[in-house]
Length: 262
Length: 328
Image (cartoon, rainbow over all chains, first blue to last red; front, side, top):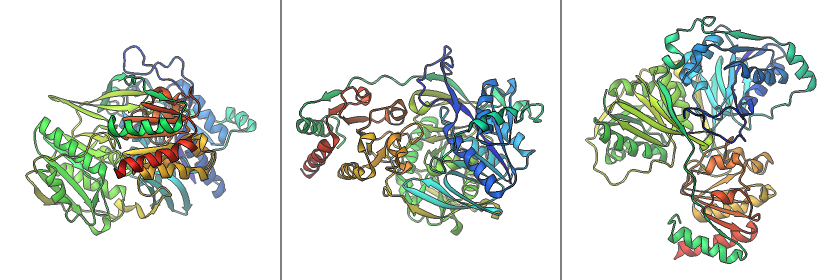
């Protein structure tokens, strides 16, 4: 079983967001970078499937600058076998399709049986790359998966939808995007952390991947961010204390008569 | 390339609320940029739906009806939408940022090699320029995204933001049945059934009113308080990450950065302190009510109406009061 997990390094979800000068990005000076929380589920599932099969390997792939190696090391410490770091100045300014093209080019050579990724990367909140990767590689996919069972060359999955779950059947090779609930990601052990230091991280550039510069980076992007701003502050609300019964009565009245929402 | 194509999501021969919102926004944008409003329907039973969307202003209705389209299969739906785009050649393609739309839109964007912005809250067309607003960092910031040489410009709309169709003029109403040559490969991934979750069919993302419980619920059994208040209001049950991580309620209900982002008309936070993680998922709600014992809880900073007190005392009174108002 050869499994690829596509991951992303993102700002810690507790981070307070500030806008960088220029107004098209966040101020990265005080950011604590972490492995995207949904990717933890993807890595855990990959390790479980590999170990259940008793053979194969888990290869972690990411796109980004030097700092992303720490996210790759996190995955290696959890138990992934090796990593690929896709980095090139030409990748700057990619839209989601550009990122998917870069990962697809790297993954194609690996011919994996299964590709796992988080259901989306917190921050950009795009929810696009996993499905695009499947499309570019002409593989089927199942997204937002909360339960997964691989048997031979097919799998059964639960996919989260409004008010319930779809029972999905899919053939391998395919792309799966992981949702919370799929598993309980393990913590890296001290032994794992030590072992991770010796595991290989292979660097690949646009040229290594044979990518056409016109289809990636700012040049290839069909959408570009032109402005990033903080949401407008909310005016102060009204606080009712002391007498709970009177407070509830008054708030219910205000919701009905003033806000007109009930 | 002109006009707007809307993929209007239906399930079990019923247009979803988010699908109707997409049709309504499609009508507005078609009037703004010029050209027809075309609406694409996909499924195994579409009877009667064309009349409904024509009533909401559809000039052209494309129907892709096939007995294999009873349950969602991404490959088949992507082929159907791609075929619809070839038929209409729209400037703008709208879908809903629902479970289906979020899954389907990127497949279509790859097939058409075009740009996609997901989960948008506003569309602005200025001559040749189409730009959209999209919350990022779970609403902690708002991005303006612009399309470049991208036809059609693809946008998925956040549910509950764009509003339902009003009483406008019906569209021209030309109905075309599209033959789509599906291949077996289109069904390599396919749903074979749907299981209802524990919260009924109303999802927090689509609900107009959401009542959420947090750490102060202390256990799964107390969510009956939340459910009772939600039922009295006809709303959905939400939860904070603390309550979900404690195993008191299913992750389906989680509102926040690693859960769902909601923007209902009314959001009631019960026993939720208001961690930045949670605020990110609900701060765009139109009216926010917070019930919390701690007067210093951060949730009160974004609440329109705050009640300092014990939720176990407040909620039953609230339910009673709502029933009185609704009964009046």
